[in-house]
Amino acid sequence: MNTNNLFTPFKLKTLDLKNRIVMAPMTRSFSPNGIPTPAVADYYKARAKGEAGLILSEGTVINRPSSSNDANIPHFYGADSLAGWKRVVDGVHAAGGKMGPQIWHMGVMDNHHSGWLPPVPFEGPSGLNRPGFSNGNTMSIKDIQDTIYAFGQAALDAKNAGFDTVEIHGAHGYLIDQFFWEETNLRTDEYGGKTLAERTRFATDVIKEVRRQVGEDFAIIIRLSQFKPSNYDYKLANNVKEMEAWLQPLVDAGADVLHCSQRRFWEPEFEGSDLNFAGWAKKITGSATITVGSVGLTGEFMAAFAGESSQPSSLDELNRRLDRGDFDLVAVGRPILADPNWPLKIKNNRTSELIGFSKEALGELIVQ
Image (cartoon, rainbow, N blue to C red; front, side, top):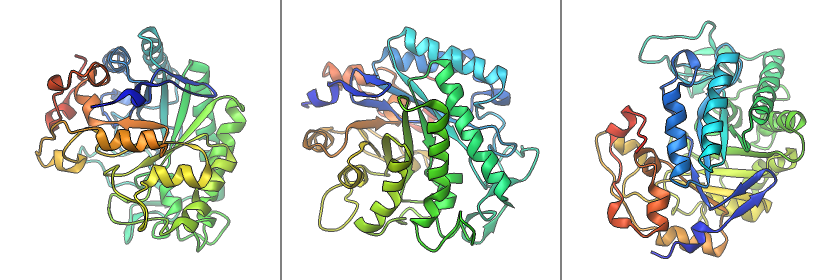
């Protein structure tokens, strides 16, 4: 495999990366009471040693009482949790890596299988997390304003802790995505609307507040998806015009990088072109983009939960698109979760040593 283009530098504001490989954010419930442990720090440091160009943390929730549905999901607020994240980023930097936290509010969620519940009900634009499923409260304007501020405070805390960037989680059916989706945002005020363009208001206000708190030079990433966990075939934007009305306001508000989540990166977004989601986002906005979705594996994420293993696959199609300029960075999830040295093995053409992925890897923090 010719992977030379994966190993070229990338620079944008505070992002100064040795290569184009991003460790994708992947939920890891190994932070009791929301506090990242030394084992979490070792887990991320191992990926820095393995030469991931940028590490994006697992989702880590902002300072809202019901931002999480899991007691073991890390927080990005509170002295103990922030001290844990400082230990994480210091270890990544000591190993020559770069890192940003993914800051997150889950919105309205299903109750966790453990039985744990947050101290107050879940919250969302209309109390829904999918059509017909209500499991939380409709946010008041004050709730929305306080949440916007909490995103900004988390981003500022990331900057003060020494992180190189911050990613806002706006995908996969969580809070920001619940505002985007007409099936979960039934509001008739300024945070609702019949069009996707109108329903971007909450996301743009979050980005503006993050930008206000971190300043102009700190790189801001936002993760987005067309699909919903309850409807994998769904598209928020059905055509290029709708996508422009959705994405351009996010860039205008201050997002530097659009992290475009797909289940399979090679699938075209719209008929008549082989451009994927990240390719169209870059073409429409001119902004830097990250592609993601089953990179380097034969199988996809949901199949792993059913016990299906994924074997290493060719990167030729990925490199063709990267070389063509469709996107700037490539996020890799399960291969790096299972093997911290995946980037080094690809760089040094040690493809026979690639180990693939199985669901057992989800049950531990692998460090070698």
